[in-house]
Length: 149
Image 1 (cartoon, rainbow, N blue to C red):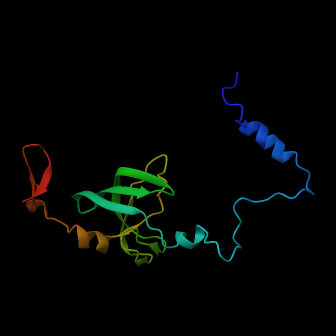
Image 2 (cartoon, rainbow, N blue to C red; image 1 turned 90 degrees about the vertical axis):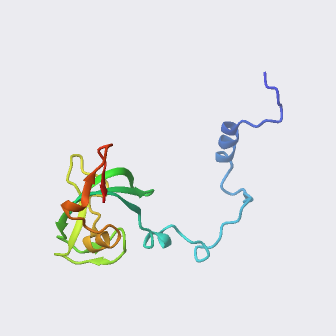
Image 3 (cartoon, helix red, strand yellow; image 1 turned 180 degrees about the vertical axis):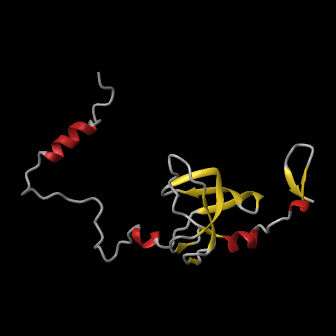
């Protein structure tokens, strides 16, 4: 038995609303703003950049990246490799334009291809926040982790 007789089953309410003739007036509880007053998601898309953090730089030609993009994917420890840009684009870290031929880092090719396969990071942006270290500067500590001297 129903303990609350005032309870209206959502399914019955939905069927009732669908059964209302078109000529009947339905009063909206929340008025809809005109299109010119509403701000769509598209307005923010051009400004959106994923959160990118360099976790490690095992060599001058590879990076381990923490990539977080709530619209596409999240990769906690993704390996990126050095390459030359084949197409123009935008740097995921700095937002600067990338021209074909620029030195970049991109996700390592794997199967299946990662969702951010077309993303690029300028090598100059990586060097600015994580400079290249010569092999002599790297040292392996007791835990087996590499660190700068």
